[in-house]
Length: 325
Image 1 (cartoon, one colour):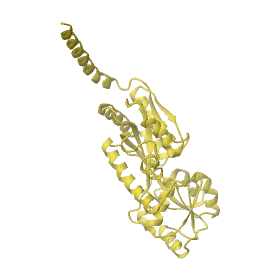
Image 2 (cartoon, helix red, strand yellow):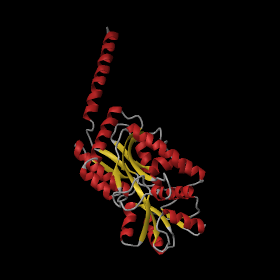
Image 3 (cartoon, helix red, strand yellow):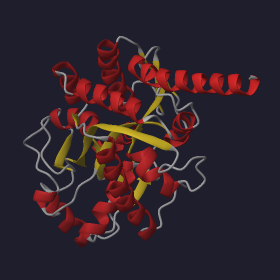
Image 4 (cartoon, one colour):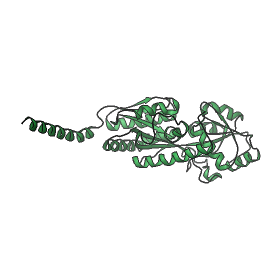
């Protein structure tokens, strides 16, 4: 009799657990969600994350709290997300730097970008703009390439540091154009702008948001944007692809990840909410002011895009022997 009662009790407990599982999923989210931003406050990633988080908060009736955890090129914040409980209440906004470039630049990362995260979805993409000083006698990409070939080793390009998207975009440009331009790393592109204006450095692939004001002020020339199509912020600036480098493209993507082993229904709910948020007119306007465009899509599409992007940057890093130092 006791044995039979134990079996009944076990069966009832199992039944209650199974019955509760859908209810828990249906109630998600029942508390605030933490969205880790692995970069400093007020930067492009932070501002983009806050714009989207505010809209998701409104839509789901729970606050999405932005938590800045900068350091190690985004690795500190990403690691916190990877090691968080897989319940959907801790997410991270990742970028090209953290998940496409980081694994190849830093082989000692405390996580695996492919196996330690659950992809939720891509939220946006942003482009860079190729800037040169007014003193450089070129008007377009083709003329810049011709000038570099006629003056090998005389041109310098600035970057926001070794292993950054800005650095690798310039290296991709050099590879495809077949030119030699010396790398001068800075601690952020903002610090390089005075030297670019003065002509101390001659090339910079900067964010279109931070670079465009200097073009409009007449202090710098914009030769091209690095996206596949022209930017709505400056439709008069041609793409690099249509300016002498067919197929050249270098964007910064932004996407949401959670820890590995998240429940599929929770992933689906989060994906739907982020897709909905980035299509809201006010969010699209705010993203546009940051030089970003909403993307959206499924978790599978996001994972496939990152895999392809990682392979591209990984090959460049290997071929050109690029390191973080």
